[in-house]
Image (cartoon, rainbow, N blue to C red):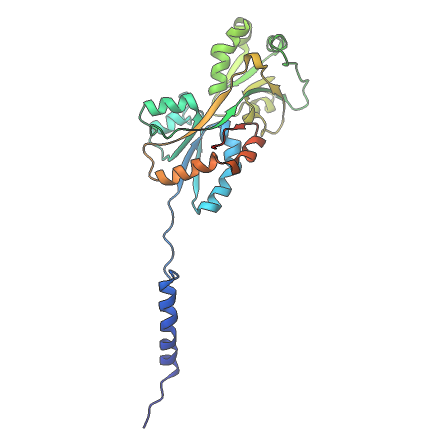
Length: 270
């Protein structure tokens, strides 16, 4: 008497070659190992461009990017130097080049990892619908600053220039500095939009995204201060190769049009 093979034993035998083929092709049933997150700290000057670019990088790389925001300099709790001093996780830091170089000197950023991303100019804004003062020339700027009842400026690169150099250069420090307020941990444009300051000064790229204000223009060329914002790899990075990949993307020709839309001049790698 011949015993016929059962249906279940036949299907098991038939499945074996298919399973072997899938295994050889790398298509087994085991899930792929998850990729680790990349941690980024970025200052305000590059934030709008970064926020627009991040989703495309995440899609193409398959990695999730976690972000912390803060000023390039200063001792505010959320500034990038303060975050690094507390050993918050960081793979990539993006901030004003002089502040980045200071972090290299402090051993917080890998020497030679710095890549210049953009040039950023300083501009002014008023509350939406308010009269637009003239800042088209140095003399007009001086008159506008003297006439303004209150002025807000940032705690980062643009504000440092304003309070330590610009007012002295214009010869109006005594009249204007007492009515100027340094803004910590908030966008200057938000302060102006609330009506808490009549005039606000910050990087153009930080003013443009704010609702409730009118951007009135950049500082005149004679007194403009262009800041280069750059990226570097944190010495404590747990994902240095992924950090390099992200920086290459931010510095690529593909990223340049998005960067330019935010009021920055891209310094694209060639």
